Amino acid sequence: MVRQGFVERHLRILFPLPAVIFVVVLMVFPVGYTFFLSFTNWTLTSGRPLEVVGLKSYLQVLKEPRFVQALGRTFYFTFASVIVEMLLGTTLALILHRNFVGKGLMKTLLLLPLVATPVAIGIVFNLFYDPTIGILNYVLSVLGLPQSGWVSDAKTVMPSLIIVDIWQWTPMITIIVLAGLAGLSTEPYESAMVDGANSRQVLFRITLPMLMPTILTAVILRAIDALKTYDIIYSMTRGGPGYTSENLNVLAFKYSFEYFRMGQSAVMLVFLFIIVMAFSLLVMRLRRIFEM
Amino acid sequence: MKRNPLVIVLFYLLLVAIVIPIIFPFIWMLMSSFKTQVDIISWPPRFIFTPVMRNYQRVFIEQDFLHYMKNSLIVSIVAVLLSLLLGLPAAYSIARYKQKKLSVFILVARLMPGISFLMPWYIVFSRLRLMDSYIALILSHMLIALPLVVWVMSPYFDAVPRELEEAGMVDGLTQQSAFLKILLPLSGPGVVTATTLSFIFSWNNFMFSQVLSQQKTRTLPIAVYNFLSYVEVDWGAVMAAAVVIMAPAIVLTMFFQKYVIKGLTTGAVKG
Image 1: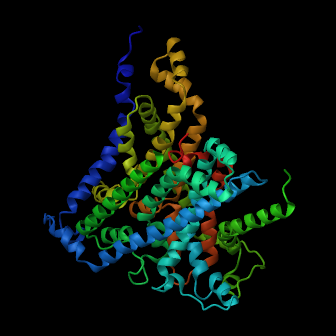
Image 2: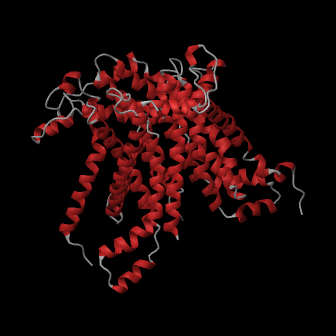
């Protein structure tokens, strides 16, 4: 037996240590501090010292109509976009799951929306959505349909933002499901052929159930980001017109860095974190059911 | 079995119908970046026009985008390199010793709303006079890159057979040099995946730079966004700026398509 050096004996501690220290200093402490701030009514610019008010700050936030609306919008935005992305993304993957000339190119094109800078995407869509010069209103007028205010109208701003999210992230579901399809075992298909199953039965009884864990993981990844959407909304509308497109993350950002009401912002962040956690755990549990 | 040619034609028509909505925004952005303001605001929208370079001149000469580009490159490259330095050994240890809790601990950074650390950073960095410094920006971007490195690399290291390292250790290498000299060179594709993905996500980051940078260290996403605050939007210049900011990520993706796909599907697909 060769004598091991100090580094080797403690490798399992020494190797991850720098990363752990980094995460503790830059994430754990700050998050802990934010959690503490959520029990205060501290406003950075007020000059008054921080005062611990306990759960009163939570009650205050819950009574704020802007918060309640932003909470609802966070769910609306996430459910609408993720459900469409899941259906559309999976359908696309099923269409593309075959050999054809140009498949590599197709995959590259699918990647473009999701590596594109969200702020720039938001600006490009703003040009599309512009009520007077935008190409979308032109298309509507050619089709003889009434024109829309898109993101400048409180009634259409949320669906317009959801369309951008769907455009940008549907390909991610497609890419993940395609990888899942490539990894499915062929055995169940062979026995289905022997049993003379038709293609619809194969899709609904074999392919989709086997794919479910993959689809659900894609949904978790997507929902985590959709719940926290910031770039697209802030760059396209800044939460407007009025407050009509603010979700929790945009509202918390404004509370922190525009009004400097850190305590109230912290409360919103605690809520947002709880929602993200709860959702991830729920879908993970669902996934386990399918894996059995 | 021979395929019906009609079916093939229909299939390709379907593909075209899928591709058009995906690439149209990019094409329109590129076209608009070569248009004059008159061509952009014309109704109906013009598909045929005389291209001009004025928008790019405006972006690079009047707006000094080279400065912002340099900032973006410094922040993203340094943040990715430091994240690899911290993340690779951590990922190795997680893979070898099945430190599942540790990996969850690092990956929680993905779940947290960014503002919950941005707000304390803002307070601390202001007190330390580190606002508008590269250090603050790089540290913040590392929190984007590091979890990605761990996420991509720990399954990758896990898949490399232990025997390879052990063979090296029989030849007298220590475990850490076996990691450096045997495992890492074998893990090139994984490192490319982790590097590409974390570079792209750091490059695209808006929120951290929005709060922590000002004139000196301002990165491209903020510079592009600030373009919009003018009274009348100069759409051509804004589109040229959008092209400039997206180009590196798109070129990287075209070169490393397989790696990007691998990275995005890690963890989602068993196998």
